[in-house]
Image 1 (cartoon, rainbow, N blue to C red):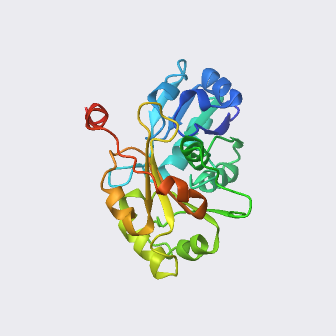
Image 2 (cartoon, rainbow, N blue to C red):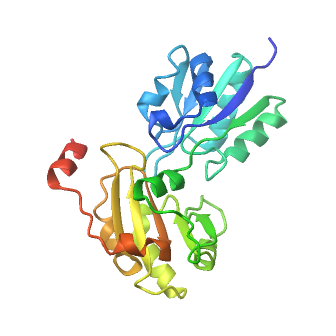
Image 3 (tube, one colour):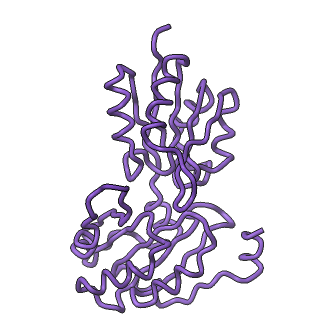
Length: 255
Protein backbone atom coordinates (compact mmCIF):
# COMPACT_ATOMS: atom_id res chain seq x y z
CA UNK A 1 0.00 0.00 0.00
CA UNK A 2 1.33 3.41 -0.93
CA UNK A 3 2.16 5.55 2.08
CA UNK A 4 -0.48 8.08 3.06
CA UNK A 5 -0.02 11.72 3.92
CA UNK A 6 0.21 13.48 7.29
CA UNK A 7 -1.31 16.87 7.97
CA UNK A 8 -0.11 18.87 10.99
CA UNK A 9 -3.25 20.83 11.81
CA UNK A 10 -3.62 23.80 14.15
CA UNK A 11 -6.66 23.41 16.42
CA UNK A 12 -6.52 27.05 17.48
CA UNK A 13 -6.73 28.38 21.05
CA UNK A 14 -9.73 26.31 22.10
CA UNK A 15 -13.02 27.56 20.72
CA UNK A 16 -14.23 25.12 18.01
CA UNK A 17 -15.55 27.92 15.79
CA UNK A 18 -12.04 29.37 15.50
CA UNK A 19 -10.89 26.38 13.44
CA UNK A 20 -9.97 27.21 9.88
CA UNK A 21 -12.19 25.85 7.12
CA UNK A 22 -9.29 23.71 5.88
CA UNK A 23 -8.77 22.22 9.34
CA UNK A 24 -12.46 21.36 9.62
CA UNK A 25 -12.50 19.62 6.24
CA UNK A 26 -9.42 17.57 7.09
CA UNK A 27 -10.92 16.43 10.39
CA UNK A 28 -14.15 15.42 8.68
CA UNK A 29 -12.28 13.25 6.17
CA UNK A 30 -9.42 11.94 8.33
CA UNK A 31 -8.79 8.22 8.76
CA UNK A 32 -6.90 8.65 12.03
CA UNK A 33 -6.26 11.66 14.29
CA UNK A 34 -3.48 12.05 16.88
CA UNK A 35 -4.48 14.96 19.12
CA UNK A 36 -2.91 16.99 21.91
CA UNK A 37 -4.26 16.89 25.47
CA UNK A 38 -5.43 20.51 25.45
CA UNK A 39 -7.45 20.30 22.24
CA UNK A 40 -11.12 20.86 23.08
CA UNK A 41 -13.12 17.59 23.00
CA UNK A 42 -15.68 19.26 20.71
CA UNK A 43 -12.94 19.78 18.13
CA UNK A 44 -11.71 16.19 18.41
CA UNK A 45 -15.31 15.00 17.99
CA UNK A 46 -15.45 16.66 14.57
CA UNK A 47 -13.30 13.76 13.31
CA UNK A 48 -16.35 11.52 13.65
CA UNK A 49 -15.22 8.96 11.06
CA UNK A 50 -11.63 8.70 12.30
CA UNK A 51 -9.80 6.68 14.89
CA UNK A 52 -8.85 9.22 17.57
CA UNK A 53 -5.73 8.84 19.71
CA UNK A 54 -4.59 11.19 22.50
CA UNK A 55 -0.83 11.80 22.47
CA UNK A 56 -0.62 15.21 24.09
CA UNK A 57 1.64 16.63 26.77
CA UNK A 58 0.65 18.51 29.93
CA UNK A 59 2.99 19.98 32.50
CA UNK A 60 3.38 17.76 35.54
CA UNK A 61 1.45 14.83 34.08
CA UNK A 62 2.34 11.63 32.28
CA UNK A 63 2.84 12.34 28.57
CA UNK A 64 3.81 10.58 25.38
CA UNK A 65 7.50 10.84 24.42
CA UNK A 66 8.06 12.85 21.26
CA UNK A 67 10.04 10.08 19.55
CA UNK A 68 7.12 7.72 20.13
CA UNK A 69 4.70 10.23 18.59
CA UNK A 70 6.98 10.50 15.56
CA UNK A 71 7.00 6.72 15.15
CA UNK A 72 3.24 6.46 15.49
CA UNK A 73 2.75 9.06 12.78
CA UNK A 74 5.08 7.20 10.42
CA UNK A 75 3.42 3.86 11.16
CA UNK A 76 -0.05 5.36 10.67
CA UNK A 77 0.93 6.81 7.31
CA UNK A 78 1.78 3.29 6.11
CA UNK A 79 -1.70 2.00 6.95
CA UNK A 80 -3.91 5.08 6.44
CA UNK A 81 -4.23 7.56 3.60
CA UNK A 82 -5.25 10.63 5.63
CA UNK A 83 -3.43 11.08 8.94
CA UNK A 84 -4.06 14.22 11.00
CA UNK A 85 -1.76 15.38 13.79
CA UNK A 86 -3.97 17.87 15.66
CA UNK A 87 -2.06 20.42 17.73
CA UNK A 88 -3.28 23.18 20.00
CA UNK A 89 -2.88 26.72 18.69
CA UNK A 90 -0.58 26.85 15.66
CA UNK A 91 1.61 23.80 14.95
CA UNK A 92 4.66 25.91 14.16
CA UNK A 93 4.80 27.86 17.44
CA UNK A 94 6.09 25.93 20.48
CA UNK A 95 4.45 22.79 19.11
CA UNK A 96 7.54 20.69 18.30
CA UNK A 97 6.25 20.51 14.76
CA UNK A 98 9.72 20.60 13.23
CA UNK A 99 10.68 17.34 14.93
CA UNK A 100 7.63 15.63 13.49
CA UNK A 101 8.11 17.14 10.03
CA UNK A 102 11.76 16.08 9.92
CA UNK A 103 10.97 12.53 11.06
CA UNK A 104 8.21 12.16 8.47
CA UNK A 105 10.33 13.50 5.62
CA UNK A 106 13.23 11.19 6.50
CA UNK A 107 10.75 8.31 6.40
CA UNK A 108 9.57 9.40 2.95
CA UNK A 109 6.13 10.50 4.16
CA UNK A 110 4.37 13.49 2.61
CA UNK A 111 3.51 16.17 5.15
CA UNK A 112 1.56 19.43 5.06
CA UNK A 113 1.00 22.07 7.73
CA UNK A 114 -2.35 23.78 8.30
CA UNK A 115 -1.96 26.95 10.41
CA UNK A 116 -4.14 27.70 13.42
CA UNK A 117 -4.91 30.74 15.58
CA UNK A 118 -2.27 30.91 18.30
CA UNK A 119 -3.37 31.64 21.87
CA UNK A 120 -1.55 35.00 21.99
CA UNK A 121 -3.97 36.38 19.42
CA UNK A 122 -6.99 34.91 21.20
CA UNK A 123 -5.78 36.41 24.48
CA UNK A 124 -5.35 39.80 22.84
CA UNK A 125 -8.91 39.57 21.51
CA UNK A 126 -10.31 38.57 24.92
CA UNK A 127 -8.55 41.50 26.61
CA UNK A 128 -9.55 43.85 23.79
CA UNK A 129 -6.00 45.13 23.98
CA UNK A 130 -3.76 45.07 20.94
CA UNK A 131 -0.34 43.46 21.16
CA UNK A 132 0.95 46.47 19.23
CA UNK A 133 0.07 50.13 19.67
CA UNK A 134 1.22 53.18 17.76
CA UNK A 135 3.92 55.02 19.70
CA UNK A 136 3.96 52.41 22.48
CA UNK A 137 4.59 48.92 21.11
CA UNK A 138 6.25 48.30 17.75
CA UNK A 139 7.72 44.90 18.55
CA UNK A 140 6.27 41.67 19.93
CA UNK A 141 8.14 38.58 21.05
CA UNK A 142 6.75 35.11 21.77
CA UNK A 143 8.89 33.26 24.32
CA UNK A 144 8.76 30.33 26.71
CA UNK A 145 11.00 29.54 29.68
CA UNK A 146 10.20 25.83 29.25
CA UNK A 147 13.15 23.62 28.28
CA UNK A 148 13.31 19.87 27.82
CA UNK A 149 15.60 17.47 29.62
CA UNK A 150 19.18 17.85 28.43
CA UNK A 151 18.51 21.12 26.56
CA UNK A 152 20.43 24.36 27.03
CA UNK A 153 18.88 27.04 29.21
CA UNK A 154 16.57 29.44 27.41
CA UNK A 155 17.48 33.09 26.86
CA UNK A 156 13.82 34.03 27.00
CA UNK A 157 14.39 36.84 29.53
CA UNK A 158 16.72 38.74 27.21
CA UNK A 159 14.22 38.51 24.35
CA UNK A 160 11.29 39.54 26.56
CA UNK A 161 13.08 42.57 27.96
CA UNK A 162 14.18 43.72 24.49
CA UNK A 163 10.64 43.74 23.04
CA UNK A 164 7.91 46.32 23.62
CA UNK A 165 5.39 43.51 24.21
CA UNK A 166 6.25 40.02 25.46
CA UNK A 167 3.95 37.01 25.30
CA UNK A 168 5.15 34.20 27.53
CA UNK A 169 3.84 30.74 26.74
CA UNK A 170 3.71 27.69 29.03
CA UNK A 171 4.68 29.75 32.05
CA UNK A 172 1.66 30.35 34.27
CA UNK A 173 2.87 27.90 36.94
CA UNK A 174 6.07 29.93 37.21
CA UNK A 175 4.45 33.37 37.37
CA UNK A 176 6.28 34.54 40.49
CA UNK A 177 9.68 33.46 39.18
CA UNK A 178 8.99 35.07 35.81
CA UNK A 179 8.04 38.39 37.38
CA UNK A 180 11.20 38.30 39.52
CA UNK A 181 13.40 37.41 36.54
CA UNK A 182 12.09 40.28 34.41
CA UNK A 183 12.53 42.75 37.27
CA UNK A 184 16.07 41.46 37.87
CA UNK A 185 16.88 42.14 34.22
CA UNK A 186 15.81 45.77 34.36
CA UNK A 187 12.03 45.91 33.98
CA UNK A 188 10.24 48.11 36.50
CA UNK A 189 8.14 46.29 39.12
CA UNK A 190 5.17 48.39 38.04
CA UNK A 191 5.35 47.23 34.40
CA UNK A 192 1.83 46.23 33.33
CA UNK A 193 1.13 42.56 32.71
CA UNK A 194 -1.76 40.12 32.60
CA UNK A 195 -2.41 36.40 32.79
CA UNK A 196 -5.05 35.13 30.39
CA UNK A 197 -6.51 31.72 31.13
CA UNK A 198 -8.82 29.83 28.78
CA UNK A 199 -8.42 32.31 25.93
CA UNK A 200 -11.35 32.14 23.46
CA UNK A 201 -13.32 29.72 25.65
CA UNK A 202 -16.68 31.27 26.48
CA UNK A 203 -17.55 30.79 30.14
CA UNK A 204 -14.03 29.62 30.97
CA UNK A 205 -11.83 32.60 30.19
CA UNK A 206 -10.20 34.59 32.94
CA UNK A 207 -8.19 37.80 32.51
CA UNK A 208 -6.06 38.77 35.50
CA UNK A 209 -4.51 42.25 35.07
CA UNK A 210 -1.42 42.75 37.22
CA UNK A 211 2.05 44.26 37.32
CA UNK A 212 5.31 42.36 37.39
CA UNK A 213 5.43 42.82 41.15
CA UNK A 214 2.04 41.11 41.63
CA UNK A 215 2.35 38.49 38.90
CA UNK A 216 2.97 35.65 41.35
CA UNK A 217 -0.16 36.38 43.37
CA UNK A 218 -2.26 36.30 40.20
CA UNK A 219 -0.74 32.96 39.21
CA UNK A 220 -2.07 31.45 42.43
CA UNK A 221 -5.63 32.32 41.36
CA UNK A 222 -5.58 30.26 38.17
CA UNK A 223 -8.13 27.48 37.83
CA UNK A 224 -6.01 24.94 35.96
CA UNK A 225 -6.80 25.84 32.35
CA UNK A 226 -4.29 26.76 29.62
CA UNK A 227 -2.84 30.20 30.34
CA UNK A 228 -0.23 32.63 29.11
CA UNK A 229 1.34 35.85 30.35
CA UNK A 230 1.51 39.16 28.48
CA UNK A 231 3.79 42.01 29.49
CA UNK A 232 3.98 45.51 28.07
CA UNK A 233 3.14 49.18 28.50
CA UNK A 234 0.12 48.89 26.21
CA UNK A 235 -1.61 46.88 28.98
CA UNK A 236 -1.41 49.69 31.55
CA UNK A 237 -5.11 50.59 31.36
CA UNK A 238 -5.96 46.92 31.85
CA UNK A 239 -3.55 46.52 34.77
CA UNK A 240 -5.24 49.36 36.64
CA UNK A 241 -8.48 47.37 36.80
CA UNK A 242 -9.28 44.78 39.44
CA UNK A 243 -10.73 41.75 37.65
CA UNK A 244 -11.45 38.85 39.96
CA UNK A 245 -13.80 35.99 38.92
CA UNK A 246 -16.81 35.64 41.23
CA UNK A 247 -16.83 32.60 43.52
CA UNK A 248 -19.86 31.04 41.83
CA UNK A 249 -18.17 31.06 38.43
CA UNK A 250 -14.98 29.63 39.92
CA UNK A 251 -16.93 26.86 41.66
CA UNK A 252 -18.70 25.88 38.46
CA UNK A 253 -15.41 25.61 36.60
CA UNK A 254 -13.82 23.45 39.29
CA UNK A 255 -16.81 21.08 39.25
